[in-house]
Length: 77
Image 1: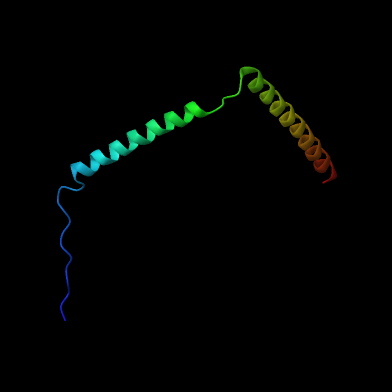
Image 2: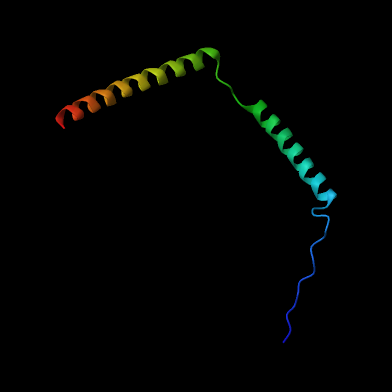
């Protein structure tokens, strides 16, 4: 019963053809991303400002609420 030794790997590493395929796939992916981003219905400046304002107000309210809870619980201990 002998030990089989698998054939050695190529000494040059990855083939240059495979490297070009990877680069071409990346370029293809980026082109497809660009096409998809053109299809996106981006919000207007007014909508963005309105949404941002709502988020900031909610964050401030939650921060105040948690701060009051923290102060209240720390005085109990």
